[in-house]
Length: 408
Image 1 (cartoon, rainbow, N blue to C red):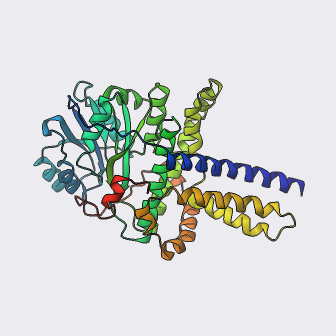
Image 2: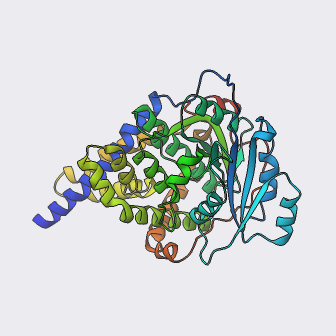
Image 3: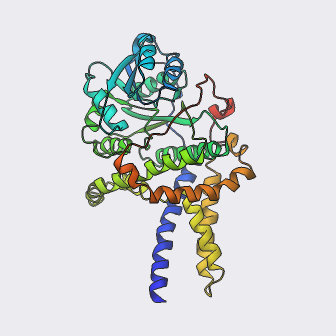
Protein backbone atom coordinates (compact mmCIF):
# COMPACT_ATOMS: atom_id res chain seq x y z
CA UNK A 1 0.00 0.00 0.00
CA UNK A 2 2.88 2.37 0.78
CA UNK A 3 4.36 1.73 -2.67
CA UNK A 4 0.97 2.54 -4.24
CA UNK A 5 0.75 5.88 -2.44
CA UNK A 6 4.32 6.76 -3.40
CA UNK A 7 3.77 5.93 -7.09
CA UNK A 8 0.40 7.66 -7.10
CA UNK A 9 1.96 10.71 -5.49
CA UNK A 10 4.67 10.87 -8.16
CA UNK A 11 2.03 10.55 -10.88
CA UNK A 12 -0.06 13.37 -9.41
CA UNK A 13 3.03 15.56 -9.02
CA UNK A 14 3.94 15.07 -12.69
CA UNK A 15 0.38 15.78 -13.78
CA UNK A 16 0.30 18.84 -11.53
CA UNK A 17 3.41 20.22 -13.25
CA UNK A 18 1.66 19.77 -16.59
CA UNK A 19 -1.50 21.52 -15.42
CA UNK A 20 0.35 24.39 -13.73
CA UNK A 21 2.46 25.01 -16.83
CA UNK A 22 -0.63 25.14 -19.04
CA UNK A 23 -2.53 27.30 -16.53
CA UNK A 24 0.21 29.90 -16.04
CA UNK A 25 0.88 30.29 -19.77
CA UNK A 26 -2.84 30.26 -20.60
CA UNK A 27 -3.48 33.20 -18.25
CA UNK A 28 -0.42 35.01 -19.63
CA UNK A 29 -1.63 34.43 -23.19
CA UNK A 30 -5.07 35.70 -22.30
CA UNK A 31 -3.95 38.99 -20.75
CA UNK A 32 -0.60 39.53 -22.50
CA UNK A 33 0.39 40.90 -25.90
CA UNK A 34 2.19 39.55 -28.93
CA UNK A 35 4.87 41.43 -30.88
CA UNK A 36 2.77 42.99 -33.64
CA UNK A 37 3.75 46.55 -34.50
CA UNK A 38 1.63 49.67 -34.22
CA UNK A 39 3.27 51.23 -37.28
CA UNK A 40 3.46 49.91 -40.84
CA UNK A 41 5.95 52.40 -42.27
CA UNK A 42 9.23 50.86 -43.45
CA UNK A 43 11.93 52.26 -45.70
CA UNK A 44 13.45 48.97 -46.87
CA UNK A 45 11.92 45.90 -48.42
CA UNK A 46 14.26 43.09 -47.47
CA UNK A 47 14.76 40.26 -49.96
CA UNK A 48 12.83 37.23 -48.70
CA UNK A 49 13.11 33.61 -49.79
CA UNK A 50 10.12 31.41 -48.86
CA UNK A 51 11.09 27.74 -48.60
CA UNK A 52 8.21 25.35 -49.37
CA UNK A 53 9.11 21.68 -48.72
CA UNK A 54 6.85 19.55 -50.93
CA UNK A 55 7.01 15.78 -50.46
CA UNK A 56 4.47 14.07 -52.75
CA UNK A 57 2.30 17.21 -52.54
CA UNK A 58 1.08 17.10 -56.15
CA UNK A 59 -2.53 17.64 -55.05
CA UNK A 60 -1.94 21.08 -53.53
CA UNK A 61 1.44 22.56 -54.41
CA UNK A 62 0.53 24.35 -57.66
CA UNK A 63 -2.62 25.94 -56.19
CA UNK A 64 -0.79 27.04 -53.04
CA UNK A 65 2.06 28.57 -55.06
CA UNK A 66 -0.41 30.50 -57.22
CA UNK A 67 -2.15 31.81 -54.10
CA UNK A 68 1.07 32.72 -52.30
CA UNK A 69 2.36 34.71 -55.26
CA UNK A 70 -0.40 37.25 -54.45
CA UNK A 71 1.55 38.94 -51.67
CA UNK A 72 1.27 42.71 -51.31
CA UNK A 73 5.08 42.67 -51.06
CA UNK A 74 7.10 43.88 -54.09
CA UNK A 75 7.34 40.94 -56.51
CA UNK A 76 11.05 41.49 -57.14
CA UNK A 77 11.80 41.33 -53.40
CA UNK A 78 10.63 37.78 -52.67
CA UNK A 79 10.96 34.31 -54.17
CA UNK A 80 8.91 31.20 -53.54
CA UNK A 81 11.32 28.25 -53.46
CA UNK A 82 9.66 24.87 -53.87
CA UNK A 83 11.77 21.99 -52.54
CA UNK A 84 10.40 19.25 -54.79
CA UNK A 85 10.73 15.77 -53.30
CA UNK A 86 9.04 12.96 -55.26
CA UNK A 87 6.72 15.25 -57.23
CA UNK A 88 5.24 13.96 -60.47
CA UNK A 89 6.69 15.15 -63.82
CA UNK A 90 3.41 16.93 -64.70
CA UNK A 91 3.56 18.87 -61.43
CA UNK A 92 7.18 19.87 -62.05
CA UNK A 93 6.23 21.01 -65.55
CA UNK A 94 3.44 23.22 -64.18
CA UNK A 95 5.77 24.71 -61.58
CA UNK A 96 8.26 25.40 -64.37
CA UNK A 97 5.78 27.81 -65.96
CA UNK A 98 5.45 29.87 -62.77
CA UNK A 99 7.78 32.61 -61.42
CA UNK A 100 9.19 30.38 -58.67
CA UNK A 101 12.46 28.59 -57.98
CA UNK A 102 12.37 24.79 -57.83
CA UNK A 103 15.00 22.69 -56.07
CA UNK A 104 14.59 18.99 -56.83
CA UNK A 105 15.77 16.70 -54.02
CA UNK A 106 15.73 12.97 -53.34
CA UNK A 107 16.60 11.00 -50.20
CA UNK A 108 16.52 7.32 -49.20
CA UNK A 109 14.38 8.44 -46.26
CA UNK A 110 12.77 11.85 -46.72
CA UNK A 111 12.28 14.39 -43.94
CA UNK A 112 11.41 18.07 -43.93
CA UNK A 113 14.65 18.86 -42.11
CA UNK A 114 16.76 17.19 -44.81
CA UNK A 115 14.89 19.05 -47.54
CA UNK A 116 15.40 22.42 -45.87
CA UNK A 117 19.08 21.80 -45.12
CA UNK A 118 19.68 20.81 -48.75
CA UNK A 119 17.96 23.96 -49.99
CA UNK A 120 19.92 26.15 -47.57
CA UNK A 121 23.15 24.63 -48.91
CA UNK A 122 22.19 25.95 -52.36
CA UNK A 123 21.38 29.43 -51.06
CA UNK A 124 24.09 31.98 -50.39
CA UNK A 125 23.79 34.23 -47.36
CA UNK A 126 23.80 37.20 -49.73
CA UNK A 127 20.88 35.87 -51.79
CA UNK A 128 18.22 36.72 -49.20
CA UNK A 129 18.02 38.84 -46.07
CA UNK A 130 15.26 36.63 -44.66
CA UNK A 131 14.35 32.98 -45.09
CA UNK A 132 10.71 32.08 -44.39
CA UNK A 133 9.21 28.58 -44.30
CA UNK A 134 5.73 27.50 -45.38
CA UNK A 135 4.17 24.06 -45.75
CA UNK A 136 3.04 22.97 -49.20
CA UNK A 137 -0.61 23.41 -48.23
CA UNK A 138 -0.16 26.75 -46.45
CA UNK A 139 -1.83 29.94 -47.65
CA UNK A 140 0.05 33.02 -46.51
CA UNK A 141 -2.13 36.03 -45.79
CA UNK A 142 -1.46 38.67 -48.45
CA UNK A 143 0.31 40.91 -45.91
CA UNK A 144 2.34 38.13 -44.29
CA UNK A 145 5.70 39.07 -45.84
CA UNK A 146 5.04 42.77 -45.22
CA UNK A 147 4.48 42.09 -41.52
CA UNK A 148 7.63 39.96 -41.38
CA UNK A 149 9.60 42.76 -43.01
CA UNK A 150 8.22 45.27 -40.49
CA UNK A 151 9.29 43.03 -37.60
CA UNK A 152 12.80 42.73 -39.00
CA UNK A 153 12.92 46.51 -39.41
CA UNK A 154 12.35 46.70 -35.64
CA UNK A 155 15.40 44.49 -35.02
CA UNK A 156 13.91 40.98 -34.80
CA UNK A 157 15.92 38.19 -36.43
CA UNK A 158 13.50 35.35 -35.81
CA UNK A 159 9.69 35.33 -35.84
CA UNK A 160 6.79 32.90 -35.71
CA UNK A 161 3.58 33.86 -37.46
CA UNK A 162 0.02 32.99 -36.45
CA UNK A 163 -1.00 29.68 -38.00
CA UNK A 164 -4.76 29.09 -38.12
CA UNK A 165 -7.07 26.56 -39.76
CA UNK A 166 -8.29 27.08 -43.30
CA UNK A 167 -10.82 24.25 -42.98
CA UNK A 168 -13.26 23.10 -40.29
CA UNK A 169 -15.20 20.71 -42.50
CA UNK A 170 -15.33 17.78 -40.05
CA UNK A 171 -15.44 17.36 -36.27
CA UNK A 172 -11.80 16.17 -36.33
CA UNK A 173 -10.81 19.32 -38.23
CA UNK A 174 -12.68 21.52 -35.72
CA UNK A 175 -10.86 19.92 -32.79
CA UNK A 176 -7.53 20.14 -34.64
CA UNK A 177 -8.19 23.84 -35.32
CA UNK A 178 -9.00 24.38 -31.63
CA UNK A 179 -5.81 22.59 -30.64
CA UNK A 180 -3.79 24.86 -32.95
CA UNK A 181 -5.28 28.02 -31.44
CA UNK A 182 -4.78 26.77 -27.89
CA UNK A 183 -1.11 26.24 -28.76
CA UNK A 184 -0.94 29.76 -30.18
CA UNK A 185 -2.43 31.29 -27.05
CA UNK A 186 -0.55 29.23 -24.46
CA UNK A 187 2.84 28.46 -25.94
CA UNK A 188 3.40 31.37 -28.29
CA UNK A 189 1.51 34.41 -26.98
CA UNK A 190 1.83 33.22 -23.39
CA UNK A 191 5.58 32.75 -23.75
CA UNK A 192 6.05 36.22 -25.18
CA UNK A 193 3.87 37.75 -22.45
CA UNK A 194 6.27 36.22 -19.91
CA UNK A 195 9.35 37.50 -21.74
CA UNK A 196 10.31 34.15 -23.28
CA UNK A 197 10.88 33.23 -26.91
CA UNK A 198 7.92 32.02 -28.91
CA UNK A 199 8.17 28.33 -29.82
CA UNK A 200 8.18 27.74 -33.58
CA UNK A 201 5.93 25.27 -35.37
CA UNK A 202 7.62 24.34 -38.63
CA UNK A 203 5.79 26.75 -40.92
CA UNK A 204 4.77 30.39 -40.99
CA UNK A 205 8.15 31.31 -39.51
CA UNK A 206 10.99 33.52 -40.73
CA UNK A 207 14.65 33.99 -39.80
CA UNK A 208 17.70 36.01 -40.67
CA UNK A 209 19.36 33.94 -43.40
CA UNK A 210 22.77 33.60 -41.76
CA UNK A 211 21.15 32.79 -38.41
CA UNK A 212 18.99 30.05 -39.91
CA UNK A 213 21.82 28.48 -41.91
CA UNK A 214 23.94 28.31 -38.76
CA UNK A 215 21.10 26.96 -36.60
CA UNK A 216 20.25 24.18 -39.08
CA UNK A 217 23.78 22.75 -39.33
CA UNK A 218 23.43 20.57 -36.21
CA UNK A 219 19.91 19.25 -36.84
CA UNK A 220 20.00 15.46 -36.36
CA UNK A 221 16.52 14.21 -35.43
CA UNK A 222 14.31 12.26 -37.83
CA UNK A 223 11.45 14.71 -37.29
CA UNK A 224 10.94 17.85 -35.30
CA UNK A 225 13.69 19.86 -36.98
CA UNK A 226 11.83 23.00 -35.88
CA UNK A 227 12.41 22.19 -32.20
CA UNK A 228 16.16 21.91 -32.76
CA UNK A 229 16.11 25.08 -34.84
CA UNK A 230 14.33 26.91 -32.05
CA UNK A 231 16.75 25.66 -29.38
CA UNK A 232 19.83 26.57 -31.42
CA UNK A 233 18.51 30.09 -32.02
CA UNK A 234 17.83 30.57 -28.29
CA UNK A 235 21.27 29.15 -27.44
CA UNK A 236 22.69 31.71 -29.87
CA UNK A 237 21.22 34.45 -27.69
CA UNK A 238 18.37 35.44 -30.01
CA UNK A 239 14.75 35.80 -28.95
CA UNK A 240 11.90 34.64 -31.20
CA UNK A 241 8.96 37.00 -31.74
CA UNK A 242 5.32 36.01 -32.21
CA UNK A 243 3.31 38.01 -34.72
CA UNK A 244 -0.35 37.41 -33.92
CA UNK A 245 -1.57 39.26 -37.02
CA UNK A 246 0.80 37.60 -39.50
CA UNK A 247 -1.62 34.86 -40.57
CA UNK A 248 -0.80 31.54 -42.18
CA UNK A 249 -3.77 29.35 -43.12
CA UNK A 250 -3.05 25.66 -42.63
CA UNK A 251 -5.05 22.60 -43.63
CA UNK A 252 -6.28 20.69 -40.58
CA UNK A 253 -6.61 16.92 -40.66
CA UNK A 254 -10.18 15.85 -41.34
CA UNK A 255 -10.09 12.13 -40.50
CA UNK A 256 -9.17 10.18 -37.35
CA UNK A 257 -6.73 7.91 -39.20
CA UNK A 258 -4.76 10.89 -40.52
CA UNK A 259 -4.94 12.54 -37.08
CA UNK A 260 -3.44 9.42 -35.47
CA UNK A 261 -0.72 9.19 -38.10
CA UNK A 262 0.22 12.84 -37.65
CA UNK A 263 0.29 12.62 -33.85
CA UNK A 264 2.44 9.48 -34.04
CA UNK A 265 5.03 11.48 -35.97
CA UNK A 266 4.81 14.43 -33.58
CA UNK A 267 5.16 12.33 -30.41
CA UNK A 268 8.14 10.46 -31.86
CA UNK A 269 9.76 13.77 -32.84
CA UNK A 270 9.32 15.13 -29.31
CA UNK A 271 10.86 12.02 -27.75
CA UNK A 272 13.78 12.02 -30.17
CA UNK A 273 14.38 15.73 -29.54
CA UNK A 274 14.36 15.14 -25.79
CA UNK A 275 16.81 12.21 -25.98
CA UNK A 276 19.25 14.13 -28.16
CA UNK A 277 19.16 17.35 -26.15
CA UNK A 278 18.55 16.54 -22.47
CA UNK A 279 22.28 16.99 -21.68
CA UNK A 280 22.16 20.47 -23.19
CA UNK A 281 19.14 21.20 -21.02
CA UNK A 282 20.97 20.06 -17.88
CA UNK A 283 23.95 22.27 -18.73
CA UNK A 284 21.72 25.27 -19.35
CA UNK A 285 19.91 24.66 -16.07
CA UNK A 286 23.23 24.74 -14.21
CA UNK A 287 24.01 28.05 -15.92
CA UNK A 288 20.68 29.47 -14.76
CA UNK A 289 19.30 29.73 -18.33
CA UNK A 290 15.79 28.36 -17.95
CA UNK A 291 14.43 29.12 -21.43
CA UNK A 292 16.02 26.05 -23.02
CA UNK A 293 14.89 23.94 -20.05
CA UNK A 294 11.30 25.08 -20.54
CA UNK A 295 11.59 24.20 -24.22
CA UNK A 296 12.65 20.67 -23.28
CA UNK A 297 9.85 20.45 -20.69
CA UNK A 298 7.33 21.17 -23.47
CA UNK A 299 8.54 17.94 -25.08
CA UNK A 300 7.41 15.89 -22.07
CA UNK A 301 4.09 17.62 -21.48
CA UNK A 302 1.29 15.09 -21.82
CA UNK A 303 -0.85 15.79 -24.91
CA UNK A 304 -3.87 17.72 -23.71
CA UNK A 305 -6.43 15.18 -24.90
CA UNK A 306 -4.61 12.44 -23.01
CA UNK A 307 -4.17 14.70 -19.98
CA UNK A 308 -7.91 15.29 -19.89
CA UNK A 309 -8.56 11.55 -20.16
CA UNK A 310 -6.09 10.60 -17.42
CA UNK A 311 -7.47 13.20 -15.00
CA UNK A 312 -11.05 12.10 -15.68
CA UNK A 313 -10.13 8.46 -15.02
CA UNK A 314 -8.26 9.31 -11.82
CA UNK A 315 -11.12 11.48 -10.56
CA UNK A 316 -13.69 8.77 -11.18
CA UNK A 317 -11.51 5.97 -9.79
CA UNK A 318 -10.77 8.04 -6.68
CA UNK A 319 -14.46 8.15 -5.82
CA UNK A 320 -14.25 4.46 -4.88
CA UNK A 321 -11.21 4.93 -2.62
CA UNK A 322 -11.29 5.49 1.12
CA UNK A 323 -9.23 8.68 1.01
CA UNK A 324 -11.02 11.74 -0.41
CA UNK A 325 -7.79 13.31 -1.67
CA UNK A 326 -7.44 10.48 -4.19
CA UNK A 327 -10.28 12.02 -6.20
CA UNK A 328 -10.23 15.63 -5.01
CA UNK A 329 -6.71 16.40 -6.26
CA UNK A 330 -7.19 15.08 -9.82
CA UNK A 331 -10.66 16.66 -9.91
CA UNK A 332 -9.18 20.05 -8.95
CA UNK A 333 -6.49 19.66 -11.61
CA UNK A 334 -9.14 18.66 -14.17
CA UNK A 335 -11.19 21.78 -13.41
CA UNK A 336 -8.09 23.99 -13.65
CA UNK A 337 -7.12 22.40 -16.95
CA UNK A 338 -10.59 22.81 -18.45
CA UNK A 339 -10.75 26.49 -17.50
CA UNK A 340 -7.23 27.08 -18.87
CA UNK A 341 -8.12 25.48 -22.19
CA UNK A 342 -11.46 27.26 -22.43
CA UNK A 343 -9.97 30.74 -22.04
CA UNK A 344 -7.41 29.88 -24.74
CA UNK A 345 -10.01 29.09 -27.43
CA UNK A 346 -11.01 32.08 -29.61
CA UNK A 347 -14.70 32.89 -29.82
CA UNK A 348 -15.12 31.96 -33.49
CA UNK A 349 -14.01 28.39 -32.70
CA UNK A 350 -15.96 28.09 -29.45
CA UNK A 351 -19.05 28.65 -31.57
CA UNK A 352 -18.16 25.59 -33.64
CA UNK A 353 -17.76 23.35 -30.59
CA UNK A 354 -20.87 21.14 -30.29
CA UNK A 355 -21.87 17.92 -28.55
CA UNK A 356 -20.63 16.02 -31.62
CA UNK A 357 -17.07 17.28 -31.12
CA UNK A 358 -17.19 16.57 -27.37
CA UNK A 359 -18.34 13.00 -28.02
CA UNK A 360 -15.40 12.57 -30.39
CA UNK A 361 -12.86 13.34 -27.66
CA UNK A 362 -12.81 9.80 -26.15
CA UNK A 363 -12.04 8.38 -29.61
CA UNK A 364 -9.19 10.85 -30.04
CA UNK A 365 -7.86 9.83 -26.62
CA UNK A 366 -7.68 6.26 -27.91
CA UNK A 367 -5.98 7.51 -31.08
CA UNK A 368 -3.36 9.27 -28.97
CA UNK A 369 -2.78 6.09 -27.00
CA UNK A 370 -2.25 4.14 -30.22
CA UNK A 371 0.04 6.89 -31.50
CA UNK A 372 2.30 6.41 -28.48
CA UNK A 373 2.38 2.64 -29.00
CA UNK A 374 3.12 3.00 -32.72
CA UNK A 375 5.73 5.75 -32.59
CA UNK A 376 8.51 3.29 -33.55
CA UNK A 377 7.14 3.58 -37.09
CA UNK A 378 8.12 7.26 -37.14
CA UNK A 379 11.73 6.37 -36.27
CA UNK A 380 11.99 4.11 -39.32
CA UNK A 381 10.30 6.20 -42.01
CA UNK A 382 8.82 9.63 -42.71
CA UNK A 383 5.09 9.52 -41.88
CA UNK A 384 3.73 11.98 -44.39
CA UNK A 385 0.45 13.81 -43.72
CA UNK A 386 -1.44 14.00 -47.05
CA UNK A 387 -3.11 17.27 -48.04
CA UNK A 388 -6.14 17.44 -50.28
CA UNK A 389 -8.01 20.67 -49.54
CA UNK A 390 -8.43 23.19 -52.32
CA UNK A 391 -6.63 26.41 -51.53
CA UNK A 392 -8.88 29.45 -51.28
CA UNK A 393 -7.88 33.08 -51.02
CA UNK A 394 -10.01 33.87 -47.96
CA UNK A 395 -10.56 30.70 -45.86
CA UNK A 396 -14.12 30.76 -44.58
CA UNK A 397 -13.17 29.18 -41.25
CA UNK A 398 -11.63 32.40 -39.94
CA UNK A 399 -14.03 35.37 -39.79
CA UNK A 400 -12.84 38.95 -40.07
CA UNK A 401 -13.35 39.57 -36.37
CA UNK A 402 -11.08 36.64 -35.57
CA UNK A 403 -8.36 38.03 -37.79
CA UNK A 404 -8.58 41.30 -35.88
CA UNK A 405 -8.57 39.79 -32.40
CA UNK A 406 -8.14 36.03 -32.11
CA UNK A 407 -8.27 35.91 -28.33
CA UNK A 408 -11.94 36.96 -28.11
